[in-house]
Length: 274
Ligand SMILES: NC(=O)c1ccc[n+]([C@@H]2O[C@H](COP(=O)([O-])OP(=O)(O)OC[C@H]3O[C@@H](n4cnc5c(N)ncnc54)[C@H](OP(=O)(O)O)[C@@H]3O)[C@@H](O)[C@H]2O)c1
Image (cartoon, rainbow, N blue to C red):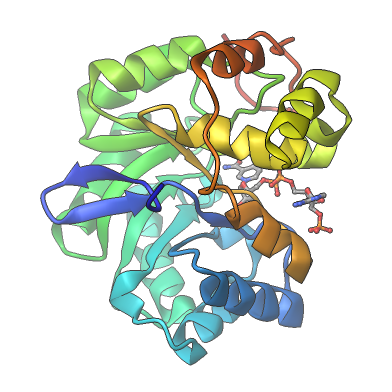
């Protein structure tokens, strides 16, 4: 299997296996992103709130890989959701990252306590039109809010928690209706998939881990992007080693059945989920 991509628009493809960077800072972030790029990842996910854009940018600049060959996502912090702040903080992200533009700019969490959604998405559309980002999207939007966002702006994705223990069908249906893609964060349930008997059984049949099974299960669906994170070199490499085996339809269905509505990321003040 080639490294799969999702076509966002003519000339804009997102590699469907990306590298997450939450909780990576300083040298850890720099070293891990360098390792990810050397391994073959061509998509890096950061955020203003991760306070590692400068290290991610330094790793991009020092890597042998061309900047244009790497898809870079960053996220607007909710407190920056008012129109002037959208532009100012996006410019600051570009400065930190040392790039002329990012590929995708997401609103990190719903932020209507700061500014109306219309205002934020209009400002994000404007920075897109001005070339500061090639695409825009949202994160942590439940399905009804996502539907509303689609009425307001040309968004391409909703980045939400998704792994075998947490299905997000209503969100996937809205995305499908609009030709968008799902970005699965915490895709390996922060490592917890390793303890699941079904995922281990499927893994044993292919000589791979429950984590590799989980990532492969995402990549065999048409419109799912997964962004596992690790600070450990061996794990960064193992998580990318998912192109040499294929799950059967029966195995895919078995993994679908592992869902138990288990959510890990649910901060105070977060949205009401479907
Ligand atoms: N939009 C949002 O609100 C939001 C929220 C959460 C996450 N995200 C994004 O999604 C990315 C991924 O999510 P996440 O970091 O929460 O969780 P994750 O990728 O599901 O899991 C990361 C955890 O799993 C461990 N791990 C990774 N590979 C492993 C392996 N092969 N074997 C055993 N353990 C392994 C890591 O440990 P080590 O690092 O110690 O190796 C780390 O503790 C984030 O980094 C971030 O970019 C976005």
